[in-house]
Image (tube, rainbow, N blue to C red; front, side, top):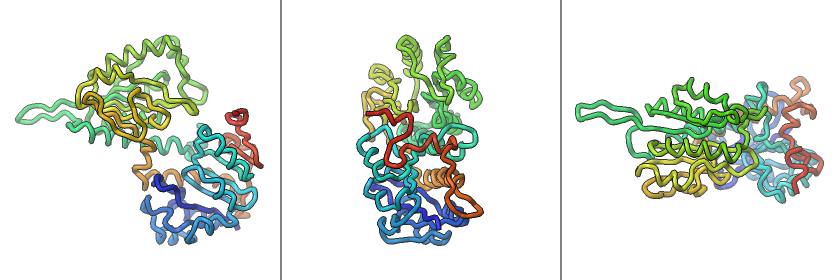
Length: 378
């Protein structure tokens, strides 16, 4: 029988890799799902709730891992954890493969097949497996909610007998999944919303959500998107022109949310110290790129600081502050991926190693790091 292990995450991680819903579906496919007791507690999935859907609850990580074919995690597991699996087992997690190369090589040395869920190709049939999108959706929503809370003033325009409360101006920098959700949320809360991105295709998306698009729309801008849909790194000349436009716009904004990330690279700097100093006291910046150094020059990752009356928040894994939702979506992403690897008649693993979703996410196999983005790294 196919055995799937789920162990507790580290103390600073609130999410878990299964939900009662996905346990039910995995067991219906013939898998035994073995979960370490308490693994889902911080996501509000009790042992009883998981057990009721077919999970086997065990007292320790070692018991969960013993002889398992698959390990499901949110964060990168330790090599010692993987070593307790059977030979050739598969591990699915957010591996952060660009960070801690030595640690990644240690994981590869266990000879497990390591899948980095954040490498999932952005193709139509893999949308249900895309963990970056599922988590970014929540992060974009929460960034606006947190920004509104820190702002300390009303967001929508209010007309009262005592006078009119003006609507807050909210500027979204970077219009990927997180940015689009931030725009939609800010609009629902009644803000006057504007947004910017270097990818020309985003202009129509921004306008369709009722926000104003802000960008230098020159020839370079028209070519600023990769075939995979990511933003290209822009020239110094373009960055200067865009910075001037943003600098003038940002002065009058109440809340700024930055979301610009390029996989495997430091976050691009979009907000300078001078821009922060030009903002009104009481304004707020929420920097969703803090984990990669931040889009704002003054962001301190993991902290909220005050600079000249402007609050700058640098949250790490903001989606994890909504653990029930984040875990539910992440678990569904894993389920959708693993489902393609299970023969439903034989109720056994049957991996198509040539499948685009497999080759796109497979980082290590048989003791070696094999992903083309990582194999040549020193």
